[in-house]
Image 1 (spheres, protein in one colour):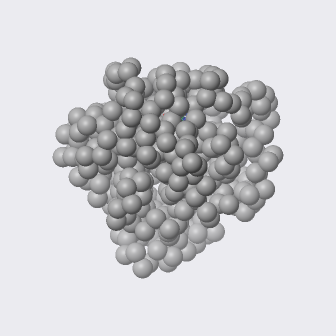
Image 2 (cartoon, rainbow, N blue to C red):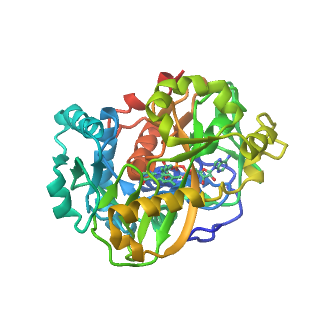
Image 3 (cartoon, helix red, strand yellow):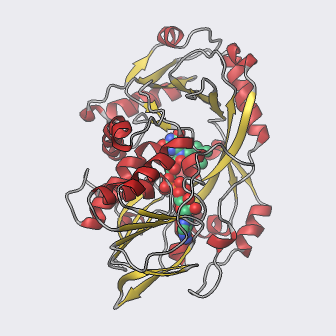
Length: 431
Ligand SMILES: Cc1cc2nc3c(=O)[nH]c(=O)nc-3n(C[C@H](O)[C@H](O)[C@H](O)COP(=O)(O)OP(=O)(O)OC[C@H]3O[C@@H](n4cnc5c(N)ncnc54)[C@H](O)[C@@H]3O)c2cc1C
């Protein structure tokens, strides 16, 4: 399966040294590279496949504050401002629009969950508000659903993943960053216990600081250095319709479907009530850390034990600088879309908004998301290895915060005043 994505060529030759090396060309690594380049800091970003090949092109493009943990909202607020300024900063439209996000509730329990969240974020003075069933009919007409109400945030929005990260990367290059694609970083190099460089499949780059922004691969990369980052994979399937006349510009999340308008007039649809959870060895070793999440979300997970388990077991967990790594074996994580889940989503959506009976599928895909035990990312230094910073574990909601997360990571790397207080994201909390 291929996914629509703006791709571009980058040089093959590795520089011998830099001040900062970033591992991973998703939205977080690329945003950090852009920030560093704008501050005239020599930076090299190394991507094993192509820019935004994994989560950063496969996501739904939702940019939301709604339903985030209280301590994660300031990052999302900072990101809103960055998204607004981005067309000017990178010289390109990224499809960003503050069209609003609405989550529907079909039970009193669900409604009070949204009310409780709204109460919890009161001090942050967001524009989020509860909607009645009648408000929902006004905002999203022609529906047949029986909603108890919903929560709506007008300042939430969307952008197009197929262009956003590639355009940020091109702007970073224009501003002086070096980006190398099709090149896996195998290991960190250290001298006297501190970062002294990285070893890639094409040779070594010396540097003072490394930012690891490797998404779903960060756990395996760090594991080879004896550092345990708890993340578990989940697979989310998505489909996109051809352009059509839809009910609203607002992105809408129902209990078992979601939809949001694409800039070409189509809709991105997913089964919001289900994710594939193929069991791997990691589920057996660190799964206990997720028990409270599991209690709340068990019904969401379609658990399976099979080919993923075997494939994961056969992938190396330890290697040395001279040997081929899993990052070279799998240039781009490209799981198959679960057609059953996509069909369920479309059926549920058609029942709720019959206008989607005319929807025709343009493409379908899936992506692996990296979930931490508290569903918040790690953006912070690693005490064991001075010079190493992490920006990873975005738990299925890091596209919207990506520009701010990358900037915050760059601030931490440079020891400069942070964009927001990074304390909620420290690595220590997961130890
Ligand atoms: C289906 C789906 C829907 C989602 N919907 C939303 C949404 O609507 N809103 C939202 O905010 N978030 C959403 N997310 C989550 C969001 O996409 C991610 O949180 C975000 O893109 C993470 O960005 P990243 O840069 O950390 O990781 P990634 O985009 O995964 O980038 C990591 C990169 O590192 C590279 N890499 C790994 N190891 C190495 C190595 N050793 N050497 C070199 N390169 C390496 C990988 O190839 C990859 O390109 C969704 C995710 C999925 C999969």
